[in-house]
Length: 219
Figure (cartoon, rainbow, N blue to C red):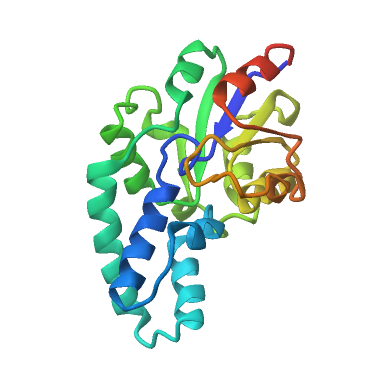
């Protein structure tokens, strides 16, 4: 019987992955490139500093610190103005009688701020929020999920993880927990292959929280 659900944050609770892609697109197009938001969807689930490092190499950006500061400024403004819940998540959580946790590659301050923006602060108290700055290694390493399991004495067999990225799925599977993929976020455009999640170990992949809720009824 499933008693505990651990949610990733970006792309699973808040529809923020598409906002990061929007910020990167705006930044590079201002530099004269002609890119689309889809060009950045593959970075979903990764830490921003890792994305900055990869993009700096790809686009031969010398000053990574300046790049990070400028992107952070753009993302922050978009985040404050445009952040929305992933469709169906609030109803799903309200209907769920499980214990709920967040395990994210974002930092805790950003998660808390995001929950406040979308009106979910009362659902996830601080002690239920785990972020990359609380562990040694971020996803795809399992540290964050192992910390949640250990500190809350959760049984692996009574716990599931909901993820939207291959990075997150690998982390959950490495923690020996069942992982369900979710593609309800807007960054999962029609041409994006769900095998990205299956290939990294997702037990199943669902297009909506409604489909996920139905699947969990018998577990």
